[in-house]
Image (cartoon, rainbow, N blue to C red; front, side):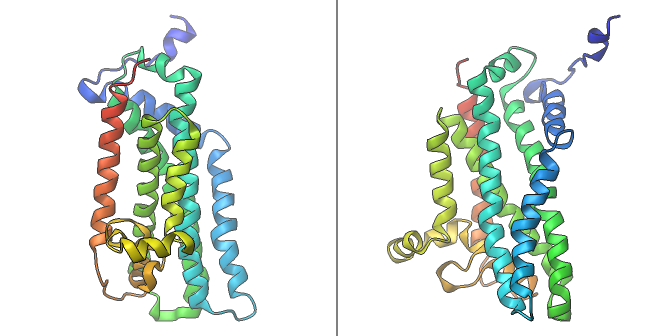
Length: 267
């Protein structure tokens, strides 16, 4: 048996899972066998924890530093998810790799779901767990018992849910459009709406209900009502859970649309 033949792993899965294991292994290798994971870690630590350390220097206000951490996490982590996710689909479509992979025993739902799983895990480690753990160490001396450990973990869960919204949004848009401009433009506009006042103020004035069905309130003080992650971190009862439920529903919907559209793609 040749070395090439010995390296082949037959796929015994059936249905929508056909090819999922092999594709997932390939995507995971792109994260953990390359420089991507530690580059993302360095960027996340510099933006999130580095900024918070500067805000807390020389006795800076810890509450403001914590709010800054949540705000930057709500903005920067989605940008990383959007950039990586759209390139994972469009890059393979434009290069012809997607067509080549799908000519093998590979179902199209498995193609999308393997990317969701690999990128979801990679971003969880690099943009949520590592900077989140360090942020807790940075904030704990200033807040003491007021900073709930379980509440902080729950706040990181909202941080991850917020990231998943933009990850799944970018994956869906990459199946609907052929150009990066449309994908990046729409996804970044949604992300910036929660932060940029010249966009947020018209939304709050003419469509305030969007604040309850979009992920902006998870990490950002949208509409001066406070970020839900901040309430959780301090162990305070949430004023509403509607944005959490709505964001989870959006994630499921985006992936369903992405699979539906990709199954109709002609290569």
